[in-house]
Image (cartoon, rainbow, N blue to C red; front, side, top):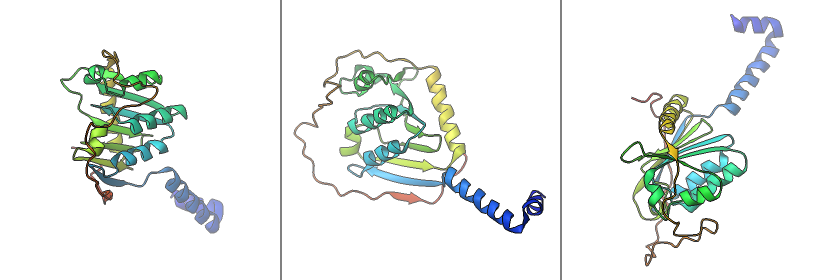
Length: 221
């Protein structure tokens, strides 16, 4: 009925033009559903996360167990600097870990909050612009990229799943508290001069290509 009224009001050519413009607008605004898998060690997982953070325009929400990755912490600070709203919830172990980037975040005026409500706040999640979810076993650490066997999924265009993850973020935010750095940082947060793993050059690894998955369920169990 609506289509018929449009045809009558605008004529056949006008209706086709309007239909084309509406489809173009949808493709521009909507995020096509996709899932990409990345793997470590040295499979480019950190680069994939930095790339997604570089596209953030409105909001980044982070749930993290451990955070010692300089490229990722810098990407979050860069997002904040260009006006993106960034919130970070960390496990309480970061308060007593001298190599945690908690110190850097505090120095850069991006204070995380601490989830000490659980024995371990073991989530590894980023929600970007209400459209993209990053999650998997991959901790946001140097070791996860260079030494550990880890995985990361980049999920786009699944709004129902985003709502579930965002709801879970809000649950943890409600019982989180202000961060307290209880030990001195092992490096100067301003210079970020952390040493690499001592005495471990490591064998070279070929970068593992990302794997694209055709579909995922729209609703979580």
